[in-house]
Amino acid sequence: MPAATRATDWTVPFLDALRLRGIVADACAAASVSRSTAYRRKDDDAAFAQAWQDALEDAADVMEREAFRRAVEGVDEPVYQGGEKVGVIRKYSDTLLTLMLKANRPAKYRERVDAVNLNVDLSQMTDEQLERIAKGEDVRNVIASAGASGTGTAQPPPASSDAEQVAPAAAAP
Image 1 (cartoon, rainbow, N blue to C red):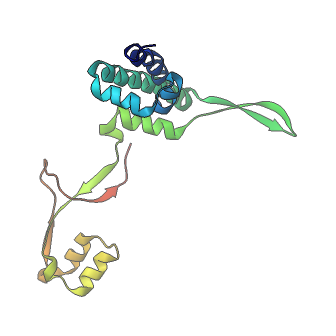
Image 2: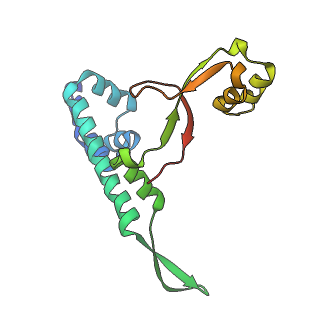
Image 3: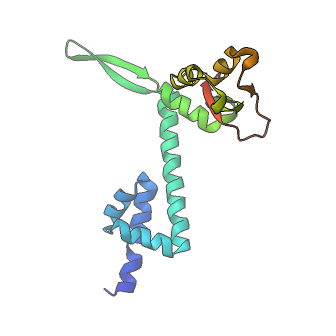
């Protein structure tokens, strides 16, 4: 078979397998092609790169449906007593449900982080203050305990600031 014909023969089984599982290694195995050949084709062929991305999106949809099923509808697991099956219990995945809520409603369920702009001159801090910070004490507490002879101020960041993230706060549903 000519090389030009062989170069396109593997793309259909590759994309079908990628669409099914979303795993490049499995798609390469299904198409009997090396990873380097697949990635080279992706880099050189915009239409193939788009088909690759579409296949990954389809695979992600399949995974989302399965995650939803396990999280919301639940999965029946057998219950055994004395070595014999006596029934089933429906189990749900709180972890999957949490991940899906964070993905689909990030404004409500994302991890929250408090941000603070610190105007601190570390060269003016005492060794004791620096040691407290090194041990993990919040810089704002160290500054506050310095009183009138403090070495800086802690202020809330402006609304659109890319302020340094200081400490995570508990996420509220």
